[in-house]
Image 1 (cartoon, one colour):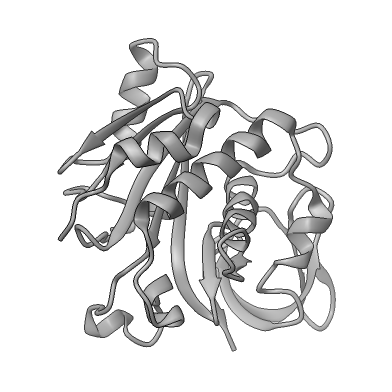
Image 2: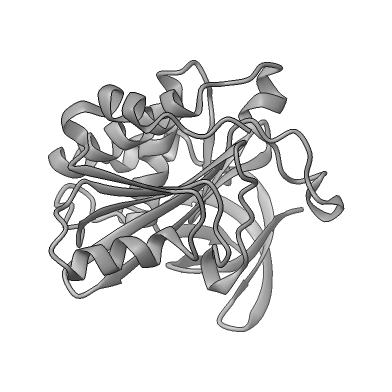
Length: 247
């Protein structure tokens, strides 16, 4: 597979990028970015890897990113303080990714709280982690992946599979970096924009929260990004939930 042309990424991302670290293989780009932060790296630093041996998703789930066909990168920033709506970092990042892909002619949705969907299938995952004042936004996105493990074939997709053509990973990465930078610098993540691209609104779902399984209808998102779940008797306001499935 053709490795990333990082010179092209730097050129396209411009001022949105402080420094880009490229690795053919690493344990986790999130770990790398947090270690760089401890050593004095500035916000806007990005670590991208062709392959991760210990890539992870939310709740410790393993994230697989095939070398040469996907993107796995981490963007370093400071802990978010978004005054307009106080959205969680994962939702800010998700909205930013949706807006970035729109500039490439690709319409995606945010699956609360940390996934991106394309035509109803998982396209990308987001993992935000903090250490002191440092916050790292890890993103894994399927760009030119054409095959998935049997257990993921019905639920995962890629930009290439949906568009029918190969995309430039350099252009995709640069667009994502640029929009993350713009959103974080200007606090421009607005709850109404997020509501517009929320994949769960109006859907009946089954989810796990506080150790119990609940089924209900998603009414939408609260002003701070909370999930509003109507159970038939009351509306639950959820700040976190696991294993959300469409019913």
